[in-house]
Image 1: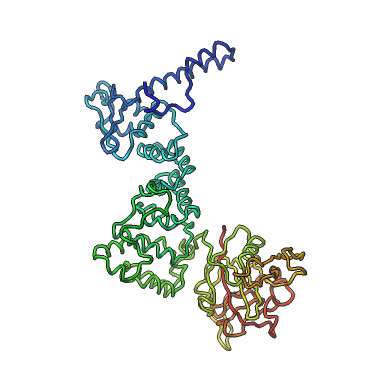
Image 2: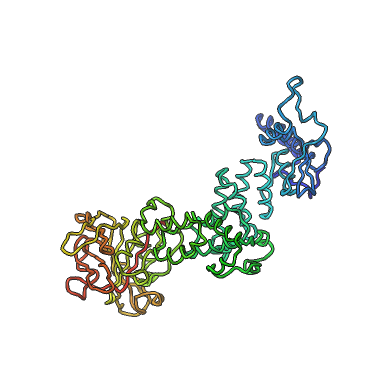
Amino acid sequence: MMTQTNSIQPHGQHNPHSQRNQHSTHTRPAHRQDQEPRQELCCKLASDLAVLVDNSSAFADVHFIVENGTKTVYAHACILAARSPYFASCFTQYLGGGADEKTGSSPVLNRLRPIQVELPNLTQRHVQAYMYYLYTGSYQTDLPPKEILPFLQVIDEFQDDDLSAVFADLKADHLLLSDCLETLDLAASKFETSEVYQTLTSRCIDFVLSPKNGDLAWRFIEFDLGEEAILYLFDSDDLEFDELVIWDLMLKRAWIMAKGAERPLSQLKSFASLAELPPLSIGLPKSIRIHDLERLSTEEQGLFTSFLYRLFPTFRFPLLSSDQITDHILMYRRFLDPSLVEHLTDYLHDPTIIAETDPRLSPRAQYVSPKSEIISRTVEKKLLESYLPAHNLVLLYRASRDGFEAARFHQLCDNKGPTLCVVKSTTGEIGGGYTEIGWKSNNPSQLGQASETAEKMDPNAFLFSVRETKPPNLDRSFSSTSSTTLNEEAEHTHSSVSPGLTAEIRRYPVQGIFSNHSVVHDAGFGPCFGDDLIISDNCGSNSRSECIDDAYEKHGPIMGTRYPGGHFRVADYEVFQVTKA
């Protein structure tokens, strides 16, 4: 009989003899009396067949050669073929056909020599465990986490989709830092074969890029992963880095692969944490510079170009400004595939060559840009919770960083879908607006000519203002007004709101009868919300921006209250893309 140490016992198996003794002391319904002897026979059949999985060569006509040829698992072709379409097909092809036409006998049983199957990468223990499942119909679901992946590899080798679904889900629930990349490598390589591996790939990516794993969110570039796994990681919305940082990671990955210096996956199992991992033997530069690439051999430079070319489809370069593309991407043109250089150059001349449906136009869903330099994080959070629930903000444009020209605003913000604009005047007033309609550029206004503007209807657009008020007592109590009120004392370091003051947020929706021109698109201006908030070209050096009453439900301008006609000069303004959380 098979010993406890060499087998996995059937899950929930009972001794049929003890069951039979119990039956004699009870009276049961007739239908149950019929069922119970059958159940006893089934249990006894499973127990008897389990004897054949004790790794004995007796009567075995299939030998699985495992663990690089050092061990053997014995099995029986007739049982495997009956239990598995995969084995039935394999044995039929191996033996050159089906049953003998004259005698009808199986060709397997007529062979004197056993069928040998080479499985060098699989372990004896886990192949034997799968044989046990085929022979008895039972499998062990309480495997230790470290045992699940090897068993899943066996199941995958034998194309058992039903059992794959069970253990893939089990593995997803027991992912460990020590084998998460190995699991991802397996799942990604099988991604196209079934929904099982698509789901497991997604779960692995979520785990690998989870903040709780710290440096693993970028150090995955060091490991010897298959191309499929690397591409899925670089394409993930959960890669929470600015796109220029992701470009730097791509350069490093291509450089590591060109040098043939990938870190073995087994190293994750050899160290308790990522912090203990030694540096790569080649000494990975902090940033890949031109001189680093010039030091590569001609062959290595060719490999670098090839690897980077294959990574590039996952790079969301349309999220970058033209200056960023020129200064940070095209500076490597000598080491880029010529087709990439041509594509980037064409894009700089005509950004419309990228279709609006192109996924590279979508920001990483979970990436939240650096903090606003106009409003505090608490105000930002309250704006989202109160007026845009279940959404994130992604910084597209900051005038003080990207330039105050209207053309720069349109270059970085057009065709980006819903946006939130935050504006601060030189007199300290703070306000802004939200629209669900993506900005577009129409012909700019010219002196003495009517501008070809596009007035847009957006019934969901709104304006808002952020005002500082001093509460009666400088404590943490909230004002009892109908608007959203926040105490900003703890947030003043990152906010325009002064410590000890309360920030009062007021929202102004569109007046229904004027909603047809709630948003105006004009290439000669920045964002325009009717005539209620107009940001002029070069708004940081003139006072032509204005705010008057028009399409929104408010009494008096939200900004420009200290200048005649509601005019004001902009100290800074930001535009955030609003994405679903």
